[in-house]
Image (cartoon, rainbow, N blue to C red):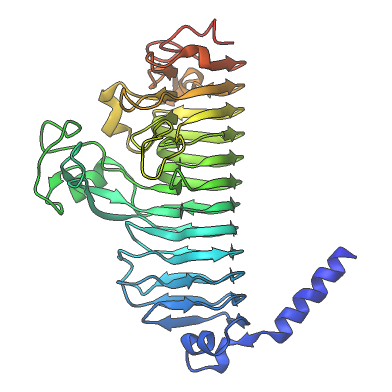
Length: 443
């Protein structure tokens, strides 16, 4: 009966939809039909300016491909419109004009947004392929984001702690800011074009210090010379605005060849059942991420950290004297459970970090000594897999090498270890051991 009802509703929608082909352009179809379902045929729709949706309940559906020729604007913008739906559409840019500074799809101040089965292809940008800002009760599901990264300049000259700029790989797959009650589920986010290997680093002079918005004035976090290893930037999924964004579910996503698989700066987040392969960092949670559950994920072939959790410069305790007073923003009350970490040290940019001695499967750290400490964390039933113990075939013979990671787990010794519970994990020792701290008393 449920299937019958769904079929009747789908048939009613299709038969009542307006066909974009009945109008001289896709812009004309959208402008003439606010609040209606606009059906796209299986063909290309060329545009030279953003397709802007501002009417509630507008839907853009079908297998059509929206091809943008203008590099200085987003492909689709949804602005202050509720219950909008974008489904089954491909968003891309004209061949030869894939390089842009803009998002592929950008939604601002929307409630009830659904972005489903959308493909964003070759939006090479330091921004994002899909960006949501001030979303409420939104869904981003089943989307396919391919080749979202760009070569550009990471400019930190405005920050006195850094005071420098450098050439970098930039760009995010999905970015979410100032939002709540959002699900990001079953998406595929893959970069096939820019791999952070030595050849790419040399070709684009990645990590080389360069001009920024302000003159070079190195701070305490600046490198001594004219090179920084921090050149692989961006995230497949970033959920941020730590004092605003909350109640987010990120599950069932496949992430391939990212700088950071996921970057969480938000409260009440569930990150579960995701697959991350080939990254600099698999999972990062910091800058005030409270009540975050990280469970059942499979993280493989990372260069530096499988999971990093720490406070960060945006964190603070309750500020009674501020104007207006501010609630606490801390990284605390989190659970890390039932995750598998394998191939630690085998990410594509291992060459950039091999000499640092910083490779770990799980790290709980402090960025600055005056940050509110990370606390009340459960680390349970996780498995770090030592791939090197299996051995590898070299010229037909089995060779067993030692692990590339230093430790399976590190916790900054400045933290209060009484506020951690570490139970039931399988942690094979790295080059320096299982952990930098005794684990016997943390059960």
